[in-house]
Length: 385
Image (cartoon, rainbow, N blue to C red; front, side, top):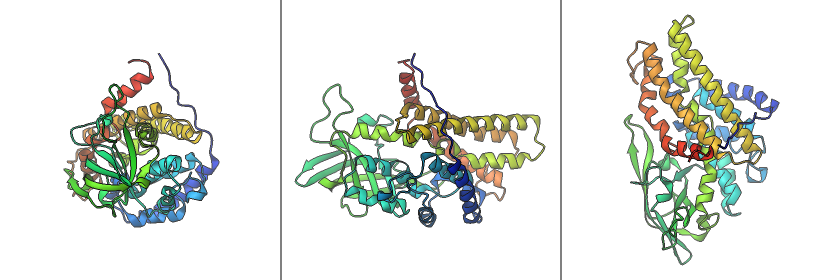
């Protein structure tokens, strides 16, 4: 059996000094936000807030300065991420570009494509990810959206679904098939590529809202009908899309958003239980605290590995799977301990945040890869399959 480790992240006094600065900023900026607004966590959308983060130098923190970055450490970036999420800051609009689109462009993008990076770092260019498709589920290798080569570029036809924030984004990183033939037999990962799609200036793209049960509009269906992408839109090498997209997953799956999405409910649960909780309440808070501490340690370890240039995709899958378990367990624990009905319109912080979290919790084990897919990755890494 193969083993995989989570080495201790290197010490970073600079990161801990930065933490105090971030908390001071958030204390002022979030003063007017209600608990249920804070519960939105990384799905909260506020372009002005994203620009303020850019002005502070808190987007693209570990990117090269030539691309608008600040050449700070991955652990300093991690501190900003976890403080934002724990405080319930509205970071959704710049999150994907900062987390994975920007680093991917830095790694494989052309000089022309890299001109977008300073706008990302300034909190003025937002990205979405075009991966999921109808009837495909979590089998990313079964995508059917195709970019067919034509004179001067590609014609794209197909549909993407569950595309978070597409209606608010300037660009999409599109994952699709290229050429006119399917991947050769036995190579399901061949014949796919990635493109940078200008969503505001590309005819043939229709963005349709997918409204959640909560009435919120985060998800979208994006339809491509003979949408022309110039040759310069190809990101990286044609046919190398699988290698590129899987390299993003360590960024997507390992961050603190994978266990802090429901953190506001934990805060309100502690407040509701008060300074003298029942024995059951004290046990539950202690148990949840230990889970958060462990997940934070694992997640920070991945940040340290990324800082060292490693590709901890396996470790990231474990963080994501364990994080989703805790996040989905938390609302049920809260319901058993506090006798309040969930009601998102309630003036009681616990009731409103509980309702919000309960409605969103089912998605926690879907986004970024389903539980079954992640456990398959982990099993292979351990030599179990």
